[in-house]
Image (cartoon, rainbow, N blue to C red):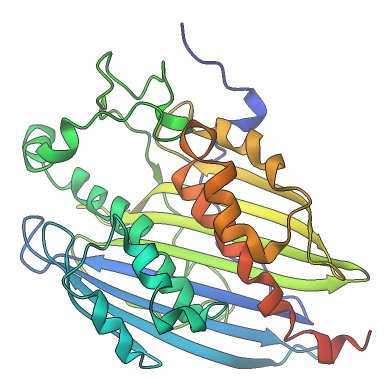
Length: 335
């Protein structure tokens, strides 16, 4: 029996990445662009960039901080090279280790954890989730039989209950728990399709087969409430030109200014690969009342397995940085 998805949760399609900047707000944007100079069977090259930008009360803008992350991983997703701006020499201890299993635990054990709350740490924290999805960029560049041959390690993996989209009985799964590989993709509205030159930081524009994870978080105050408006998109290039969106969400949230506790989180599915994926948004109420600063860990605890979407979880974990962004607003707020 098919798993029902309420009409109100069904994805509504790719959207513009950024509204006009609000006076008296802070915007964080990050991008992670993946390329494969030697093809899918070769190394993966990551070009990550980020920026925090304050829009002042008079509409002028101030760049608060910029960051970049460069990484090369081999076909087994083992980190071969890693470097950053600002320079964090301790990141070299991650070389020779996986960019996926155990990565966040190892990152937390390095002095780089002191950079938490910055765009650089956001890039570093995003490595496992973005790396996981990056290879999907190739799916439209190969005949499906050849693509599945190259992805044999994933093709035979049992995925039951890994996430909401792969819950038991999902249309995404074969009876044995392996993937059906029949995914919904939608044309992506490119993140640069905005009228404001400062809407996004200066990011990479690689050619050929590329995957990009793009994030935006806008934060502002209104009385006793911290407001958040956010955007998340995984997209890849197409052989005929343009981009396709693979995962895309928008999100609004409110938190108590004094305590930093979550009042409400409202994610909206825009593009998702499987019929059951949008059901994950029904479970985010489990975060109500928690401090924003604790969300990186709390999301993984409360929305694990079939209760959560890997990519929505990544989006909500990033809300832990909202208090750091909001601190840039306090001097201007006067209250």
